Length: 226
Image 1: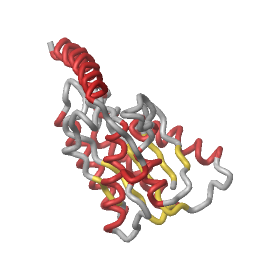
Image 2: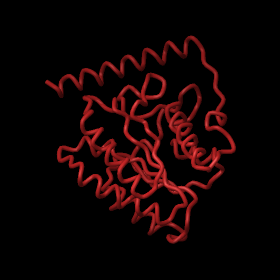
Image 3: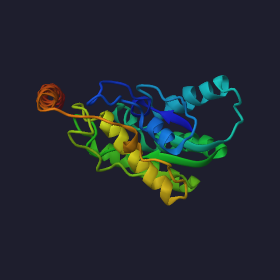
């Protein structure tokens, strides 16, 4: 499995009930039993994928011409926040990235962006990006996991941008469902790879921390809108 993208795919962060915050791509690879080659980086835009991550793969891979069973691409959340956002330019570069994966992978899978992503929200830009993602994916025969309605306390951090540990697993669950419908069936569910226990004190502490962080994000978003 070969993966490009931003911090959602790079992952990393706090444990959630002892569950590590691994990438959805890694959980998907483990569920499928595939070796995993990650090149995602924090803060990446689609230009980062095309100009840096793909060249990094060509430079660092033991065999840059090797084929892969599955290619993953998750990008766009940083693009829609750029002051010079351009939907047409995004679609063009997204096509280059998908095209690169399609030439080397038996299957390619990508994600749409949650509509509730980020604060302040930028729903119109997110939908423009999602439209581009779906059109380009369709033109290359790539699979799409629709995350438009993805969100909620347990699966998203207080910044409404980055998935929690359980959120990463939830995305992986959605990914293996889409792949299974296309004939690539996982040997185990991603959620079957973890074991955890909760406690009332732990839940209370987590809720208080989330409320504090959410308040900071909301206040900052209000100042930006003002």
